[in-house]
Image 1 (cartoon, rainbow, N blue to C red):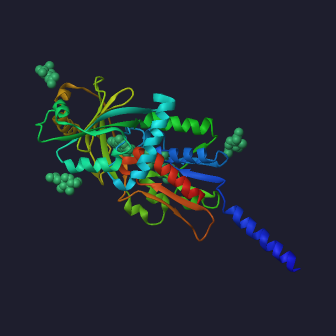
Image 2: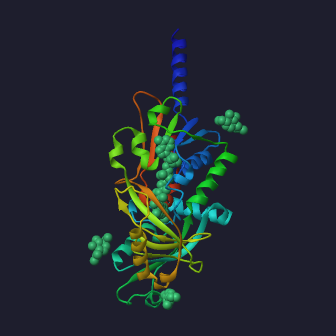
Length: 346
Ligand SMILES: Cc1cc2nc3c(=O)[nH]c(=O)nc-3n(C[C@H](O)[C@H](O)[C@H](O)COP(=O)(O)OP(=O)(O)OC[C@H]3O[C@@H](n4cnc5c(N)ncnc54)[C@H](O)[C@@H]3O)c2cc1C
Ligand SMILES: *[C@@H]1O[C@H](CO)[C@@H](O)[C@H](O)[C@H]1NC(C)=O
Ligand SMILES: *[C@@H]1O[C@H](CO)[C@@H](O)[C@H](O)[C@H]1NC(C)=O
Ligand SMILES: *[C@@H]1O[C@H](CO)[C@@H](O)[C@H](O)[C@H]1NC(C)=O
């Protein structure tokens, strides 16, 4: 009798261990760059996991569609995630070239404030290729007095939303049999008990989908970029951190504005004049460059990225939040995806 009791205890422990093992069925809410990267990182870790990706609007209407997705990092706190992404983009470019939507691209960041450039160096200067501070003669390329400007050069990657995200989605569908379902999820509770793990990658809606009071912490940061006719522009150029041009695979983008708590998407003449006026200080030759199209989007702002796992009293389902990436969703996408996967397997 005692033996039988012991045996059942052993069995119960085994079942407990098994159910705490790797997830078998995962829901990802969001098919922007964050949700898609998270789905791909999960499948690369374990192709046998059953993954469903939910989205509530066509990809063209998400903020992940528009950006050139230049890799650059202002917040040193996210260094590790940035480094993981950089290595990933380098590997993808080596293996697939521009077919992946990823492009290797060198360029310059200029600033009158050298402290800001040292901070850039701390954030990625040791792993980004070809990183160096500009020597005086290299500053001759730009329309500033030699003693009023500082600059750095490095090799980066663009991960163009409209090419890179569909490239990942296709791998998910074709190679990994991942299902994409258009369905608005009111909040995570709706999927609890139907999945082992739910990853909330709902961007600007992340707080609403979390349904735990975080909605108040998530806010829009309005951005605008213009596609310009300047095919001779072959480097990215930054003056400080919101005035730039980036050449992507087939075009050149000029930007931007960062307007917190503003969510109107209509692009005004003021937006474009403001961007042009700032950019001309960096490259006056752009005076006669024509604008081919414009695009605006809302970055999912939060005081910090929410990337954590939440355990529930009422269910075994684990919730992982991965949202609030602000202006760095592409830069941090792969590092955050790997972290989310680690949390799913913990
Ligand atoms: C002008 C501009 C320039 C930028 N440039 C750069 C750059 O150079 N580099 C960089 O790293 N970042 C850049 N960004 C920031 C980047 O665009 C964002 O950080 C990133 O796209 C956020 O991705 P996401 O997947 O979190 O959100 P989104 O792309 O918004 O995706 C959210 C997903 O969640 C789904 N969803 C939302 N709510 C629900 C719901 N209730 N039910 C089901 N599905 C739901 C949506 O359908 C969508 O699929 C730029 C942004 C702008 C506006
Ligand atoms: C330069 O940048 C640093 C760091 O962002 C800031 O603390 C400092 O006030 C800036 N200096 C000037 C002169 O703007
Ligand atoms: C693909 O996924 C669907 C839905 O989860 C499943 O029914 C089907 O068996 C899977 N096919 C393969 C080849 O794994
Ligand atoms: C822009 O075009 C005008 C009119 O054709 C010309 O006079 C001017 O020199 C051009 N400026 C630049 C910077 O190319």
